[in-house]
Length: 112
Length: 114
Image 1 (cartoon, rainbow over the protein chains, first blue to last red):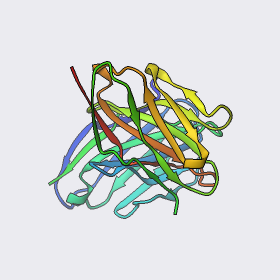
Image 2: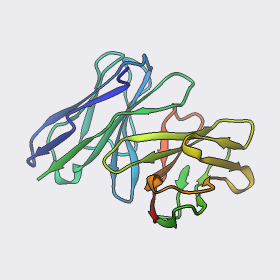
Image 3: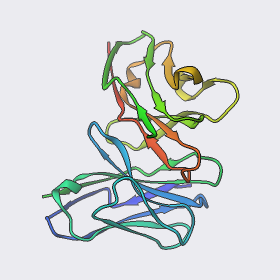
Image 4: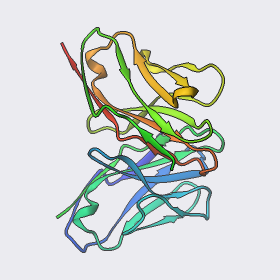
């Protein structure tokens, strides 16, 4: 049982390049989330998907887009990367009513 | 506004000493409360959670937390710290009616001296 799987684990981008962070969960969870973690700021919610077919903005959505491809997969896209998007990105999922999040191991992204 | 505060950015304790990490939230009702731990370069692991009932909750690795409604607090405690407890600790809250979105505090980094 893998839980939440994120790919890639590390990535270096040049300013202006685009990329998609992939996330998949095998726990049949309805809700999925993307967070970014920056030193001294904790984790901040970028986007979330409460159920398959729906997505909503979180606290820091600017510069990002998401796709809930199916119940298992929730991807995060950076269309034109900026140095301010250098961060560690975490995907998480939760089952209905449990509020028990399961986190992926993170993607460390550096934009130069 | 709904918020979560961890007032201590960095705490150093000696191995074997007791530990208390503080967490306060700003909200009119009782939220759902969590503590997570993150070791360097790793993801987040759930230590414990509080939804309702007994205000003293037990978690993994010997941690416990107490919910105090009057103080809007959910402090994490451990009677005797081990060197392997060195990590960053995050308090997190689900404010009811927010589609289960977790709001995190800014974290407390724990250093353990031998």
